[in-house]
Each structure stands twice: as C-alpha cells, then as structure tokens.
Amino acid sequence: MPNVTSWLGKKRLKHLRGLAKPKFRAGAAAYRRVMTSLSIDLSYASSRLEDVNISWLYTKGLVELGERPEGLSDKEYRIVMNHKDAIQFICENRSVLDLSPRNIRDVHKLLTKGLLGNPADEGRVRKRLVFFTESAYAPLANEFQLSEQLEAFSAKANAIDDPLERALFTVALVSYLQPFQDGNKRTSRLCMNIPLLANSLAPFSFTQVNRRDYVFGLLAFYERGRHDFLADVFFDAYLRSAPKYVELLQVIHDGGTIGSLDVRPRGR
Image 1 (cartoon, rainbow, N blue to C red):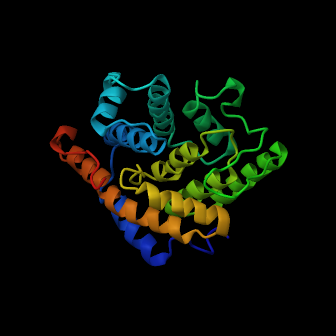
Image 2 (image 1 turned 30 degrees about the vertical axis):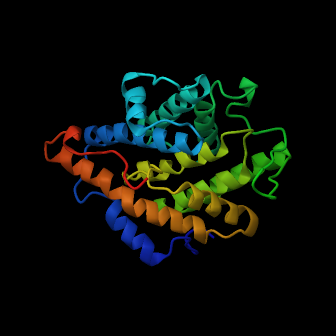
C-alpha cells in the first residue's frame, strides 16, 4: 500500500536519502552536465544487460560523438542510440514527467525504434502473449487487461511519496506486467529514473548492478511476489553509484570540470 508499507525500509531509505541529494542547491546547468554522464553510463549498462558487447569508453564515443565502434551490429548500434534518445527525453522533461501510461509508452517507443518487427508495436500495449525462457511466469495476455493494469500501476506509483520507493516499485512492476511486445526491462530501467530526476536526486545508472543478482531478483518477484531480493540489488548498487553523481555536481559547483573526475563505472 502506498506510503504505508516500505520495500526498502526506513533505515535503508534514510541512509540512501543522505547519499542521493547534494548538500547545496544544484543549478539547472550543473544538473544538465550530470545528465550527460548519466546518458553514457545508463546507455552502457542497460545495453550490456541486453547482451550488447560494448565498452564504456566506446559507449562514450558513440553517445557523445557518434563514433560507431567496429564490430557493432546494426541492431546493437540501434539499441545503444535508442537508449541515448530515451534518456535525453527523460532528462530534458524531468520537471514535468510522471509515471503515467503515456510517458511510459513514449519511453518505450524511443527505446524500441526500429527494433520491432512491426513499427506499430513501438509504444503500444502488446496484443500477443509473451513467454519467458528462464521462468514459468506467464504475464497477462489480454491487451485490455494489460492497459487496465498499466493504469493501475501508474496510479499506485504516482501515489508513492518517496521517489526512491517509487523507483524500486517501477523497475519491479513494469518488468512484471510486461506491457509491451519487447523492451519491457529496458523501459523499466529508464522509467525508474523519472521520480529520481524529478526530485534532483542522483540517478540510477545500473553500472554497479550484478546481472545475475538483478535477474534473480526479477524472477523472485515474478514467481514468488518477493521484492526483498530486488530491494537488496537496488540498495547495494545505489549505495555505490549515487555518490559519484553527487560528487560530480560538487565538482561543477566548485568550478571544476567533468574531466577532473574519473566517471567510468567501477566494480564490474
């Protein structure tokens, strides 16, 4: 129940809140520069979770300069560039976006542009059944029920006051509902940043997420309704990644440059 139960718990929430927000008021220009770092980090990490074999440095060159590395297939190139476009959409509209079905569909449309067999499926609630090779869980198949559940998710998510709780709820529930024909986990990973960015908190980039733990957490939620494993993944990863973005804001606030801070992800 929104604002009654907590998936992270009061102690963890208090700890993360202390890490996630700078001690000073960050200006819009400084926050935009941090979003450039997020665009690289999240494009890299989320694409890697989709089995795109690209390094962080090559992702940086591709996102910032359009330099396509050798050996990257057309599909892999499109996955990375779609991430860039979807992240920029969220960053540029962070002050007005919420977790409405329309906004979630818009993010999905950007993420899947040119990747689905039918372009009409981009941003559209699916009309067909989806299956999991690694799980017996079977999501809803009826498009009208899916639309209703997406509306219900949106209402509940937007009713959650704490943006950290809202982010965790989003990455779990959008993945669980599987509202689209493909690209659901990608959509959940980007949409979970909507409440964080709207509240000027450090974003969640997935650079510190262990893939095995992440998949296990999702499966535990799909099959057992257990959120605790995914909450552990969220807490541990955000604990390590959030300070980087706050430090980056501090560097910019103090008149430094992004180049003075090594922003490459660690621990992978």
